[in-house]
Picture 1: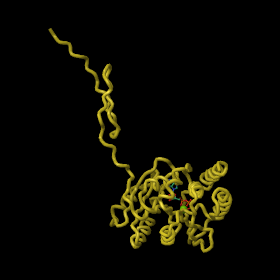
Picture 2 (picture 1 turned 120 degrees about the vertical axis):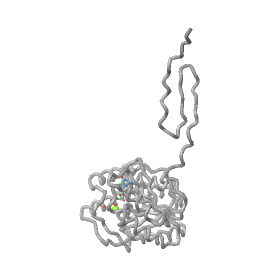
Picture 3 (picture 1 turned 90 degrees about the vertical axis):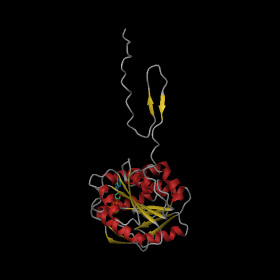
Picture 4 (picture 1 turned 90 degrees about the horizontal axis):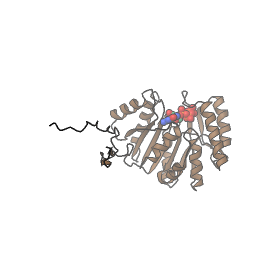
Length: 282
Ligand SMILES: Nc1nc2c(ncn2[C@@H]2O[C@H](COP(=O)(O)OP(=O)(O)OP(=O)(O)O)[C@@H](O)[C@H]2O)c(=O)[nH]1
Ligand SMILES: [Mg+2]
């Protein structure tokens, strides 16, 4: 007499997600929960430093080597412990490799980290870096280094004396244009400043890519921000003011860089419409 074997049942497909528990379903049986491996530590958790500088980067393979070199060289000489974090939004020009190569070749006294950001946009990238930082002071500068890194000395002086936010400004007394912008950008910038002034009080230049903060103060403001593109700075400054924080503007010797990721039509229109929305919402 032959004993009939139960029909072969194909094993349930294994989850390909390593950090989720595996659920095994079989007809008539209870769901069995097999614990999966522990979730990895947050991928962008970084040790605390005194100052962490985020550089949002989209297709910046050409400009980053000089910017990283100048920034790290400057930071090495400062009394505070610093880290640089490049936030890449899936660049396709080898930006990530440039950062990794730089970090590998450098002596690591000023660590250089690379993180990604799933949401596109400069604002989304900066927000991600600042919210994942544990450092006492945090901020960002652009990959074109239009604002000299030496401006950090003044920014840190203000922050260490208790300022919550210090931003570089091209439109306060003492500021100058070492290399000025094309006429079209200047006109667009003037119109944008006029509009931004209706959302952010007493700030003359919301758009200069060089802003530093006391982390605890900026965290609440960042959490409330929804703008992901270039108008992010306006919303961030507005949220800081709504929370009662002051903003210190420091004059800058600013140089326009020829290759820009800012498209006056696409990004300009999006930025104007984002600020109009902020204005109507306020
Ligand atoms: N991660 C990330 N960075 C971005 C994105 N868009 C722009 N950036 C970065 O934001 C910074 C500012 O961009 P810039 O090209 O300097 O534009 P801008 O400063 O507004 O305009 P310019 O006055 O022409 O320099 C640069 O470091 C860009 O690489 C993006 O979608 N993702
Ligand atoms: Mg720039």
